[in-house]
Length: 367
Image 1 (cartoon, one colour):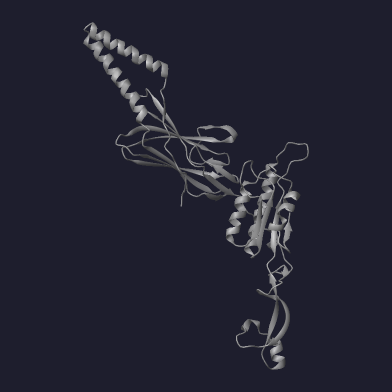
Image 2 (image 1 turned 30 degrees about the vertical axis):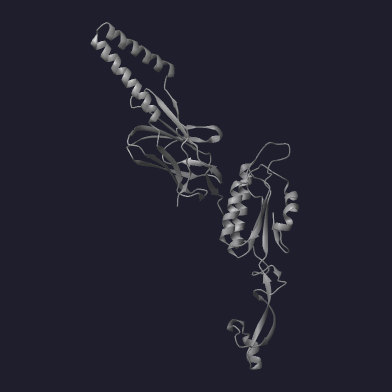
């Protein structure tokens, strides 16, 4: 599936190239044509009138050339891991019977995403790059331009806004349109590492605490034996007791619950009094947290997260209640992708605020 940015068709502002010079030339051509007619000089009048008509048509063409031209930006996926390659697809559709001889498309590529096919035209603020490409569109034609980009670093990235520039075939005038569209993000998840020596070893592989109500028997916690009842599973048979007593007996196991694990991520990596955001240290912490989350979820545990660093104005949740399953991994990676060194609250204060909702009884805390 493609992640697509929605589009609108705002009012077009025409920016003539050399506005004062062009209007002055049109006035001079008009005077030249009138003088030629008055002095009965056919060549002079014809030349002035011809160039004047071309200039007028060029101006009208430049004002209308981007009308009914729809533009959209798509990516091959809206989720990726660090190091993955994505396809950036720019789509231009001309919905009128008049062709567009040339159109220049400019798209901002955020820092953290690298253009693989070719080099960016220029570098902008905050490390962004500008992708510029030119094409032509026939009448009622759709053109798709594909570019390969690489996800270099975790984060949430916004593409756009797209900018279209076109004009008349003679280059007298240009028109420019900025395509306003809804915010679309590409989420780059942090990479995950295999944990050394098989990861975290638990004292009770199936559960960390005894269950208050019976749910699932834990075969690692046998508590008694009883006589066989019709319907009991053969896996519960205690063959040693059965052989000794001569009648079938089964094991009775205690019930346990899979322990919830809450990851605490401290995003304040600056030293006191030193303005050093230490992005490498924070990235290592994020990668470690993502690796632990994947390992624990794969073993059937419920995993939650409390982090105290999100971008300003962002609506990211800083506290996620423990849950199990692959869907929870995507939720955790989504939150870890956007954490930064911008601390909203001290971590101990966040833990006190969200402990009742995020830390169930018996949960394991990893910080």
